[in-house]
Image (cartoon, rainbow, N blue to C red; front, side, top):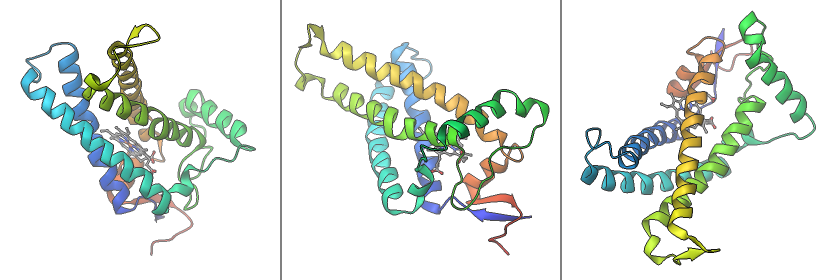
Amino acid sequence: MSALYLYPAWLRLWHWLNALLFLTLLVTGLSMHYSLHWLVPFEVAVPVHNTAGMLLTGFWLAFVAGNLWGGNGKHYRIDLRTLPHDLMVQTRYYLHGIFVGAPHPFHVSAENKLNALQTLSYIGVMFGLMPILILSGWSFLFSTALPDTLFGVGTVWIVAMVHLTTSWMLALFLIVHIYIITTGETPTTNLKAMISGWHEGHEDASKP
Ligand code: HEM
């Protein structure tokens, strides 16, 4: 058994700093939203949340740049002809096969490290929810520059609802994400890969 090098250093650095920022935003955001001042005092939560949000924006841009020019973008390509079938097979595995010891329907390779559900969910999160979260965050920060109302509804209320809904969706993603990463060849194969870069347990060696 050997390993494939699938997670370059920049991606791992991005991933763990992004996760740290996301957790910081979640804790400070919850603390502000529910007035949990025992969790993080309000006067601390506000500047920490704003700073983490600004840093997250930079990290998001770095992720886009890294995928455009860092070689990782190939894992986000979708083949529309095989997608419906791959999605069905993968969903069936997560809902049934995994509980009855069925073999993994997807095999990680140097060309394709993410299964169809991972690919779609990461695209949805990184290119859908994250930009909405970031834009609504910046709109919140500069809300005094926004018009008072939009289609007769208070603009700040709209921004708040968009920001809040997106945050909840991303928090939900995180729970599912942490479960799904434990469903690799062993419960820690994926975690080890995101730490060391090497995905273990391959017959076709690229590591001596
Ligand atoms: C403590 C929290 C987290 C843990 C333990 C974790 C763990 C992991 C692991 C082990 C992988 C590699 C397996 C795979 O490729 O699917 C991974 C990939 C990934 N994670 Fe996380 N993650 C966390 C938080 C986040 C957050 C907050 C986001 C985004 C908002 C995120 C986005 C991603 C993306 C986009 C990938 C695929 C990267 C690539 O290879 O192109 N993760 N995560």
